[in-house]
Image (cartoon, rainbow, N blue to C red; front, side, top):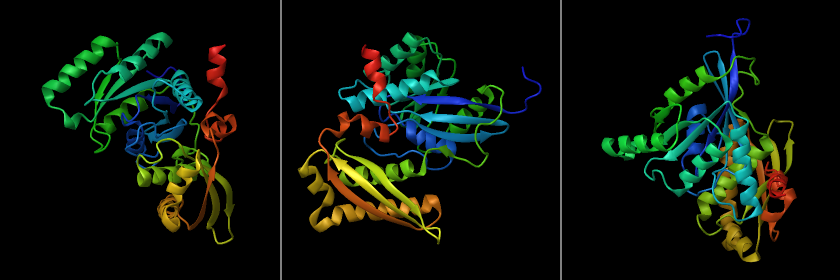
Length: 309
């Protein structure tokens, strides 16, 4: 029932939370119908909260793709986990997504405990259900809902898109009445410079796999739109050791050229015009403890420190 008869539109926030590699970013891209968040086989790929916008009927749903929630070891980890919980605290709907093939493991248990501590309601999204037999899936569904009083449960495959439309429709109805916050054709609330850095970081992960496990970050240093509409951009890839820099460069610069070429192609496709991308690799020891670097990534390094006081 419309409690605000003078308003015909709905708008609100949905935070997608879960353990690393549960499929949050894949789901976000499927909900939007366009690539917004980077997706790799690595856990903890998402570092800062990314907002994506979906319009469904008269509703505008702003999705917050949060970093995976895990036990932090470094300041970067703490800032990522803080960003995830901050996104959940500010949302109208919290959606916990879990990898159904892993079930109710320790990581999921810790997140549920966090929901209980914060006294938050949540919906449950079981991902990768196409990989489970029906009896096992039903048993997991019962187990999860016995553990926590989820308001609703959805079974999906974010990779194939199965069940995603049901989530989109449900959330559109669940949003509160109010004016839209973004233009109808806007897909994300993400600065272009940050998006460009994320695209390069994804290619870096895909190319180097486990050789640079989380010792690198990408920053867009310059962004210049030329008269012909093309873009000239310089990016710096920071690593922590000289040996990592050599791995990233590759023999005679072959590795960094391949990463740059693929990032350039994808960025040009997203932006719809030519991109001149130039990559530079620098060594910066302990960048993961550097508050300035964390702020450049859209994280708040002060939150974890405030909590400890």
